[in-house]
Length: 408
Image 1 (tube, one colour):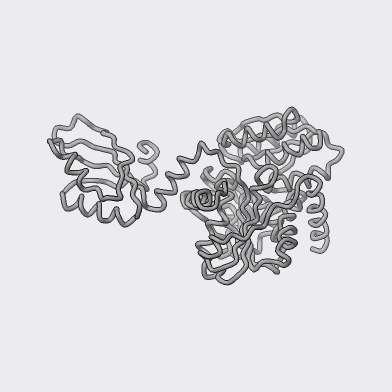
Image 2 (cartoon, rainbow, N blue to C red):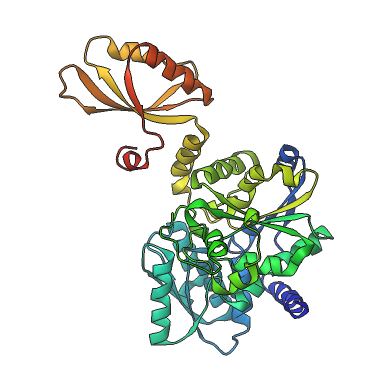
């Protein structure tokens, strides 16, 4: 471990040739809410707006004679590799999933310029990874894993080196988002048992929990790609070797829609733009109140590469999760005054966001898709009570994923 800490310090020093330390900022809003000293390690303010530049920089500086680097990435690792390819005047071939947000693809092109070429392959990261490794085996070059690489893990550990230097001591807790596990492995290897590390992953990509349960990295049957920066179907083998003793209670899985509430709050309250993976650590605070009260806590905001074209979706998800927006199917009587009667049941804080007839040929009733926004979740209890009292038939489809895919 002494050797690792020496190498981590060397990696952190190498960062200074490219960019300054990312800020460690105490957040008054979160500190007051949770009764703790909450700090944000702002990896979203690195040159590529994520921590991934660290692993790329460290691994590539150790391959000084290499002129071609190949990688697979959901977006952030790609940007780090592209940035360093241009910085080091070497070539890069970057594979990204077809589902990668356009913002990340465009920024990768900007950072790499003529030094990189981009291939969009596969709907899921693991498909992209296989394509990149096959290409590298055929064409040559040095394959640079986004997380399953000792030099990449070492580079990510520079986050912890900076945190301790900036804080002047170690925190009580550090909260880390988990994708493939490279950053978590690096940070916890530096802190060891001096800090209580907590790990947060999206519920639709909980590969750390799966690996700890199975005793080895295992593929997930299905991955929800919304939290694209952490939507990995299998934890890396090297990260697992460093994380295999993590207690299961220290691993938190958050629903994707819930993460959206923090993205919206941080944007509106703090003016901080976080991508879904970047918001994981902050959102997890709500699950940790009893652990963190009175303590010093560092949340790693891992990335801010957010495509604002996704903002309506993020808002929609946040509202539905918070219970202030619902969709339902209403059987509306086909008689004069029925619509007016329905509208009269709305409360002063209720607003119709969607109104669409789905069936107009029924003789006595018509099916209507209704979307309603309100200011407080309890307003819906009162609204549905008024519908029941009037004998109106309705079906709440807000959380019916099958119907939502077709209708909402």
